[in-house]
Image 1 (cartoon, rainbow, N blue to C red):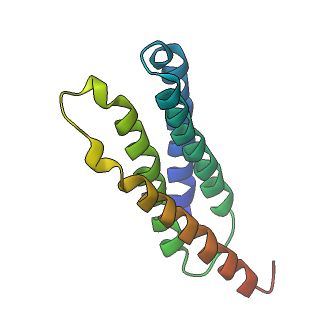
Image 2 (tube, rainbow, N blue to C red; image 1 turned 180 degrees about the horizontal axis):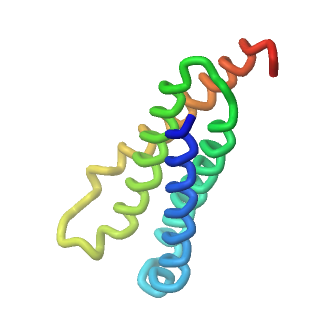
Length: 125
């Protein structure tokens, strides 16, 4: 459960740092659509960081799968959005990352489904 708590705290911290970076620096460089997308990545990172902190307090059977799905789903979803929004600052086309965002979202959805199923199987909750 330590992995859940550590990853959750790191995601929450990073979302605050990136949120500050976005609102104080990126706002004047990104169009509204890209800025909104960047904020979506930040929000999802915070939501799943907090979720991982909460889940870290519960004993859930076979939690490593849930952890991996949350961790990789958050990384793929949020960071693909961040990189796609910031690609004008790099001298390379990052449009190949477009399909990575829904893959990350699918991993997150899978994690939530598995978590719900595992919670339903625990009789002591």
